[in-house]
Image 1: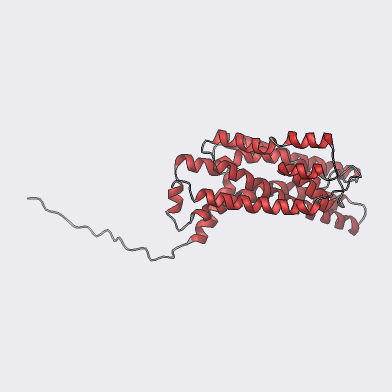
Image 2 (image 1 turned 90 degrees about the vertical axis):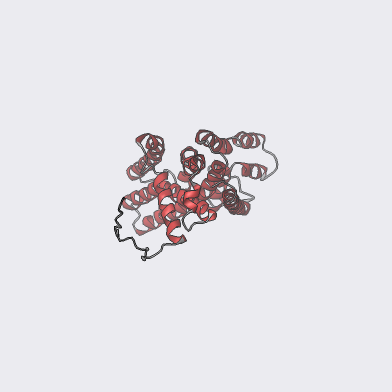
Length: 288
């Protein structure tokens, strides 16, 4: 006859604070920012992303150094953001699939939803985290350029004020760029489970429209035609937007007047809203 012994292990119900949707959202947001910069991932995952980030930072350092030596503005803040568009697309091609395709491929979305988190929370946390990371990549060099310009100016308070205005314009344009390009990238990547294919799709979406814009610019046409055609290419449209907002409404280095300036602002708002709506709708259908 066997005998049993009952051991009281002291198990008790959890009586501590229960963290809700807000905590889950913030945790995933922080995790997304860290993942975008490669933190918590292997060295191979960091090489490409940090190479792009390093190039962008190096350009900012060179511009700052030249400006400090010559006392002239080599490139304005908005111009810097526009010129970094291609590098940002390459960076997003590496980051967006990592944030969206991996979770779908490994089918771990159900683990996130086991917490007090909704599908829309997941989508928005991923999106806002990625936008923050891309914005920081641009804001760092812009701040360095401002510091260099403010410290090397020979015009006193007026020069510092001009540098501050240029920094504010650059930061504002960086935020717009991050919102538009990241929203499109995450939406495209969320539609494809395989990361390599998703990365290629992100690049293709941005680059496939460039030939059409180039042809329109070569052919010319009625006033403002090139501007309207450029809307099929988000980076080009963002360039026109910055020129309308920050270059007195003129195309830089020419006397051409931007005709459809306000429409580029509407365009940016519509693209952001549409991508956010479609991204949330996409994650309502992704299998958990």
